[in-house]
Length: 237
Image (cartoon, rainbow, N blue to C red):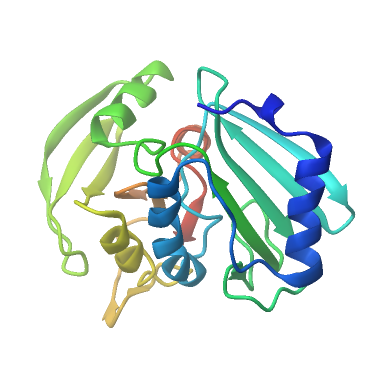
């Protein structure tokens, strides 16, 4: 694992200078295999309204470098660095940067982002069992309650009863498929690909690792818990 103390201010400023001054076409990462997975997914990330591969860590720290640029450090529960993300409102022309023209929930403005991972991308994200565990740690009553099919997703989902509400959790075998199918969902969740959807309640779509989670409802306490545990919605009604 890599702790934040490894990085001096000079190294961070080198990344910023290279990124903003000339664009980045190559970086050397501590974990070559993990970084290659991330690089392979960068094109899909650009299509997907998110801040990279959305895995909410236990701890986050934000440092502003300039009025237009800031760095987010994400740590796991052992305080080891998971990912360092650079975000800027200055236009970037290289494909290495993920461009979010409408931003994302929580950062609802146009920006460009680049993420450097120090742990395996897949291991940094939740799976179904760890999702249930984290929701239970938040004091919620959680149990599996059967299967669910949605015509717009290629995998069968699992119904999760959370107190009086229900989550639909679709867990995939690989990250590229997860991200490609998540990218089909319109920002207002009225369509997925070519399929128009009429929901019985307000839809909220979440993505974490190889899971897409749907919550239909408006319980404010539950939504806050889901944002804390899973991450921000990438589509919502």
